[in-house]
Image (cartoon, rainbow, N blue to C red):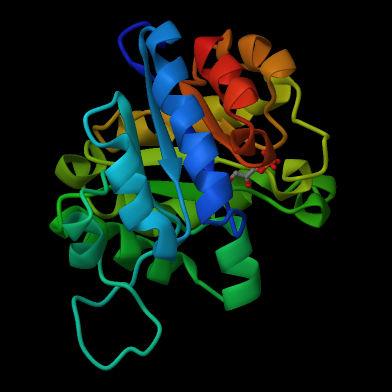
Length: 248
Ligand code: 13P
């Protein structure tokens, strides 16, 4: 299916980078540069302590913001966790769930990821559900099986919920390695995800690609019919580079 009906979306994932002074400059750069970007939603997902700063500096601009994780629980004795309602309190629009770094370093299961997506939607946020295979899984020819396994509990949330989320395909071997998937490689997996979404009655969900996206490779990735935008790590820390991806 051609993606002309789905608005492009480019989200920066700052990961555990930044401080008040750095963020202030980066956010000011995004705020002033966003006017040059047309036809694309642009957002940043920042570390929790900087949500207030981000909200203060981006409010009223075309750049929206969010967090990089959320608790599956509403509230209670969960030391260190952050509830979806707390993110909504800072006018977050987005939250990443199931990033591969959360799955691998924090043992997040597919079921937990789906529960987090559900909690985010209940608070009015748009979860960006990340999926992707490791290098080992890719080399063993297991990519489709891994994506299907990761998607299953998310697809089970039903078409009404699915229409309110975003999927990001991030092959683990392409994250932070400088080795992006080729447009054709990424499209092949995006087509699988699209087929699964269509079968679940949610073919219009946006599917982003993530993994070493830069200004120089964004246009060729976005030319693929099922790639609706990007989830950007390293390159989102430089305003001009990040905006050049959104402009592509
Ligand atoms: P890089 O763009 O740094 O490869 O990171 C991708 C990513 O993990 C975004 O969530």
